[in-house]
Image 1 (cartoon, rainbow, N blue to C red):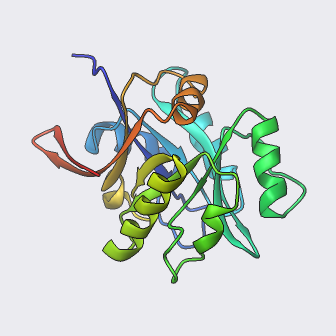
Image 2 (image 1 turned 180 degrees about the vertical axis):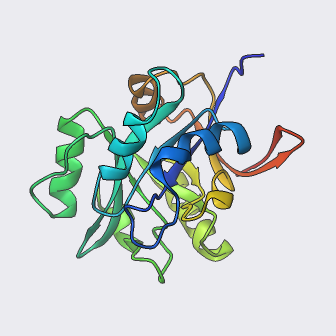
Length: 212
């Protein structure tokens, strides 16, 4: 049965992030078969190579793989989705403009996680499309502060595992209220705020979610 929604993990690292052990050639099959996801975004640190390798290993139409990257700036980290080349101007504001010009969207990952380069209060002044309100590696307090910021700003809410090992994929997810069948759909529904962040879990092949 085809779902009327799409469940995706929008923050996954491969071995092209130095602290991850996930092979890009296996990430999509694991996400689809084991974690029961409809799609993922590969968001390695400062590189798109993991996404490129994963995309080359897949058949066309096999699984929705969103191009993404977690870029580090003096201000903290941002997630850029829908870009296929890195920006050459490395300030947070310039990167946001670059992603928009490329037809992509920008999110703040773990913004209030002091251990992992969140942008903290800058979330209120940068022009963001989405905020990661559930990061499976962040504390309850950090996630609650991110959720409050998303409510205040009217930003799309994302849930993500921030997976660095295969077993973490799908621990937190973004639920799109409509089917996401393409990158264009993904961008459109982020911009229209048609997302819910949720904790994920797999039970006998059926996904259980706890929504924030």
